Image (cartoon, rainbow, N blue to C red; front, side, top):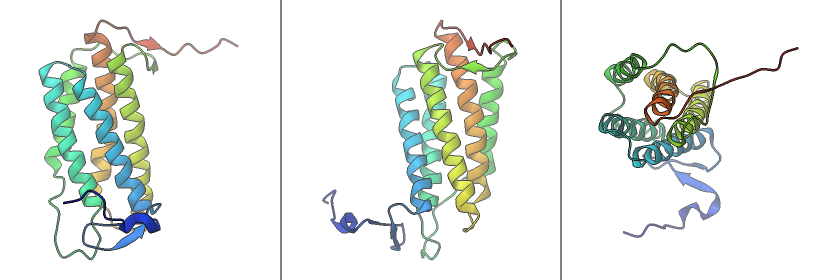
Length: 182
């Protein structure tokens, strides 16, 4: 099978199920941003973190692929992509709690840069928030599975906690925001 089809040369792309939309369609922006997020998480996963982190990131990548596939499926498709389930959100919450139990209490705003891996987790968090905003926006006109929005919201919390966890486990330090005094 060839990787190129030339069908997109006119500025459109095919949703799963056959419908063609403009490449700038909000649905494409949403699932494209989820895909971008998945790539950033892949970079984090490849950084050689501890096994538990790598396994969690692999689980998250699979769930993001599920979310992206759901977002990329036309409403009138004659098939259903298996979606996210509530356990996927609970998985993130348990992972957040595990990491949080090993971290000092958060008393200040944290700036990215305590460690390379922590900074990468912050980048992923920012992309996650953008994906979430796009999916929420898309949901104004199209019925989007609310678990996708919930998952992305919780995932950004996970990525923030992971950034702190990586900063501490990699021997880095949290860089706290230092506002100017008046």
